[in-house]
Image (cartoon, rainbow, N blue to C red; front, top):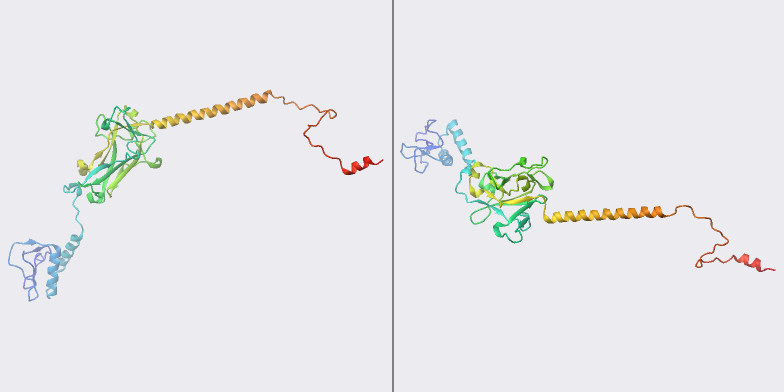
Length: 326
C-alpha cells in the first residue's frame, strides 16, 4: 500500500493496503507521519507489514485512514490468516510410499501355500485363499527410512483408498465386480460378521487393515488366479506408482483341505450314529413282537412255595398264648 505522505493527504488508490512505494523499512518521522523513500516503482508488502505501518502512523498522531481503505486492510489481514493448502496431488516433494504389511504369520494372507509336495519353492509356490476364512490385507504409508507417514499429511483430510480384485489372465487393469460372481445372492466380497464389505476407506493415520472374505472362486473364472490391489481414488495420486500396491496372485477355493476332511468325518460320524439308532430301534421292535403279552395264569396257593430267601413273619404273642392254653 502507499503510505501517507508528509501532508497527511492520501487518495483512495494510494491507500491500498497491499502496496508501498518504498523497499526501505518504514520509520515514523518526528512530525508524526510515515516517511518513505522517493521511488516511483511500487512494491507489494504483506498485510502484516501494512498493518504495523499504520499502527506506527496512528501512534504518532497521524490521520485515520479512509473507511474503504481500513476495510481493505482488515480483509487482507483476515485472508492472510486462512491456511492456503497447496493441492497435495500436485506435490512432488513429499517422501511417502505405500507398502504391504505381512499378515502370513497368522495365516490371514495367504491362508495356505501349496508347494505340490515340495516341487515348488519360493515365489513359485501357489498362494491360496479360502471362502470360509477371513482375508486380512494390510497397507502402511512410510517414508524412505521406513518411518510411518500419516495419510492426513499426504492429503488434506486423509487419503481415500480403494481395494479392488483382478484376474491375472486377460486385462488385469480391469477390476472385477459383483457381477463377476455367478451366484446371484453373493457379492465379490463379504465383510465382517457376514456384513457388507466397503472397499473404500479414508486413511488419516499411517496404517489400515482390510478384512473380508473372497466369495469369488477360481473355478468361477476358468481356474484363473487373482490378486487384490490398493490405490488412491484421487486420479493424480493414483498415477504415483509409489502409492499403489498389489498382492501376489492366489487361487480362491471353497474351503481348506482340513475343513473338507473334518466335514466328511462329521458326516461319517453322523451316519454311524443314525445307523446305530436305527439298529437299536429294530432290535426293540423284534423283542416286543417275540414276547407273550397275554395275562399270567392264576396261581395255586396250596402248591405255592415261597422263595427260601423270603423272611417269615413271627405270629402275634397273643395268638401263641391262646394256642398253648389247655
